[in-house]
Image (cartoon, rainbow, N blue to C red):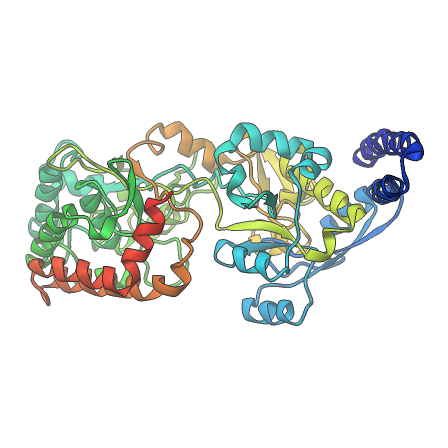
Length: 524
């Protein structure tokens, strides 16, 4: 109950100040007297009652969560609350409930819906002053660890949400993974660093039987490493980046025409797999780079780095791709090589680097805006569960010895709680921290993050999309212009359209609304 005691002490000081202000106002005229009485009443109502049990309806990052789960009960007891867990796993059904006025007290909200929910008064204000007062550790972490994102949740002069940092994959570009044995088999002695070296490797992977099975059944690359070709010319098709100080959309930059020429040539020569439009994962576990794991291509950057982590000690859980490869080609695993994006003709290079945010904010229902007791209690829970080591360990992993054990300084889940859905059911995972995973906490508890950071290369050579929240007119135009871009790029790569069609594509993209988004982005 330490959190509640601290809250109570701070509220006593606030109440005293409010009473003093009311007393000194007594000698004013009647108008001022009424105003001060209202202010005094407001101050008194703005004092959270920390002894009062609060009912809170809560949506975690993942669902479903049982109301009587062990970790749910721990939080209820510690913060003197009754929590009703709301299942939002069916997004459509959840939206129907919201439309019917059944708004939970706290829930994650997609960026794309944020402005509308504010305009429709579905979510309420969360003043920075309240965050600083009732979630001081979280507020301080925001100031020091993700300061550039603090204002994203502001609309006008009011704040309506909490940002959700994502250090596990945020600010990291994808890991480039090479079949080292293939490089050896085709006579390449160093990992390619330039586009010309990369091209040489791709042709040899296609034509020189890199797997030594006597068949011509391999390709150089598929969808994920097409990105390194775009990056070698300075842009990524789906990202807004700066050019001469102004935000521009990658897909319509003239440099992309040169990248498309390269890819069209590779497709024509059978170096780029003809199935690239279907991606590299072929079902099942989404994190598996199927084409690479099955020996169809020799280089990939599919899925986040953590899915490629080898064991760091005996019994350490490996990334899903490593585990999958060990089943059929264990020798190849031991020769995997980690590389970097390749440099283009002018030295430019890069793969998509994600910003350090999840795609949702944490918001409070409008009803919480006037209920200071509830607002304070929710913020206290978030503070404990996201920005203190003790709270994070409990709300992410559960109880030591019951749900996890410590191994080599890191938590290791005990079955069945190694299954994300199982730990979520009892209130763990991202239920109460709501995926507010701070770098200062994650680096202490996450083995994959520590490994990725130790590689020392994943935080460089990245191209970040600098438009984080949807542009004002995105809901009107984005779907159509994305369709135009996707179809045009595929048509030019596969030869259905000539490369010179690029200029027509740009004109079509702009006419369909792209020019509006360009103007809105340029104003940022």
